[in-house]
Image (cartoon, rainbow, N blue to C red):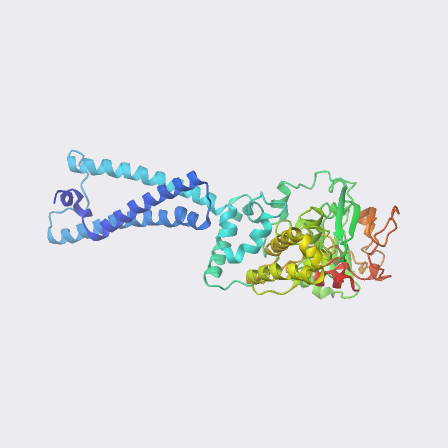
Length: 504
């Protein structure tokens, strides 16, 4: 009875439930924060509970407390007219003084707990754990690609949101729509790209990769292996003409595009079909280039939306990069993860990766069975002497699959075109195809390979040892098609260095 008298108006089911929720919520917040600090484990669902569910429980409980008290007091006022409309704050009354002190202390503790939870909750919503792992099925492909990318130490929000309140609010509003899509399973598979209304690269990418920076040429060696019994090594050594300071009078090379205002019109959402390009000249005028095969009419140009070219028009997959089976096998062989002494390992690995599988587990089961079976059937001696290398190859091929194929989201290595280069997608050749001419017919956007890179050396089966080449030599003689046909017309189909395993 003494407790009931002390509690006063708070002694009612609603207020007591509110107090219980508040105490439990506070205890859980403290416990989960302590667990996270001690173990260092970050889990999306633990974060969701710690920073959203439990603080929500605390706030809801504290709302119930005065609601219940008000309802009891209001009921008693109807029965007893001596109860005043508003509480009397008489600190000379020991009981009320104690209640006031308790209220102040409880408020301070409440503000501290909610403030800490709010700050940590904000940090949690800005983390890659929140972005990539909370909606695990939907975001698994992109999160996996991010973890294996050059930007693996850059948070999602640094590129997708950037600084400033305006884009933060836009991102959170967009995030609510995405949460609804996940909750109702109304999201598309695969997720469509490019992202509409993405913040311009000038506000995000250029914080690190600023245009005024001087860019020298870059030497790069491409390692390949022929899909034959010997897995014959191939090597392409070239100087990539990235270019000087793009916004200077000496701008040249690939990064010339970001030092000059270039506008274009795309017919398709993925920006693969570009029939119109306009380049701003130093005097402020524009030179327009039109596709000679599929030109637009003046009326279509006037109505179409012109896009100002930025970093992401070439670097459209700077982080979420998926690699072809051929490229992955090359990199694993050259790094020693897969033994090149295994006959046809390049070809067999690519073929196993390219087969359609309904689930990741089905793929793993097939790779684990088919790869050893191939050597047991065709090379029994190798199967015995190279058993460890074969098992290692199985592990690596599974790893390649897990990073580039996601059946649940209908995503594979070639789902999202990568516009850098031109091996598996048109890339540079979307504009540099020799088929875009100025309206006066005097200029053509060149397809000359030496504009972007210079061949330093090349090693492969059809090049005599020691011979220096100045232009790329195709592994198989395809005649004039090397200049007429885009690389991606053949290579996009199978993801191999030589489509069809060497059978053109």
